[in-house]
Length: 117
Image (cartoon, rainbow, N blue to C red; front, side, top):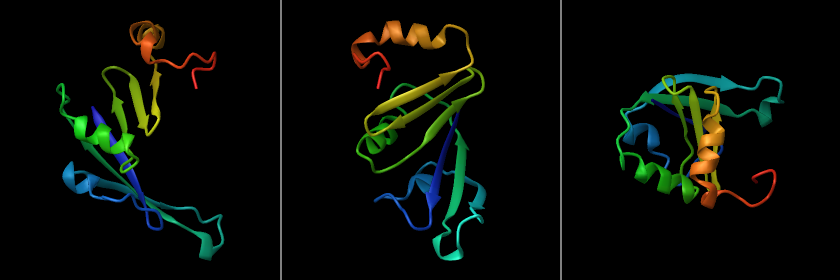
């Protein structure tokens, strides 16, 4: 599994140490040159490979839930992306039936709205 995060030069989460805590490697830096120079932000992306075990990412998920960090998790093996945020999480999967299985398994966690928002 891969864990990735980004840092903006002008918007930093309070702790801003996830790349250090998870020993992440700087993957790339991006600047939107279509913006006026005064409005341009530099975004640096970091990533690390992680062997997930139950409880191993609890601190990260708590930080995300408290809007102190941001990260996305990718599993090539499971063909799934998990994008947690301070109000829940989004799951993207290429595995047929994976989303339906998750919706059935975690029905109690799901919004009652038809769009699941």
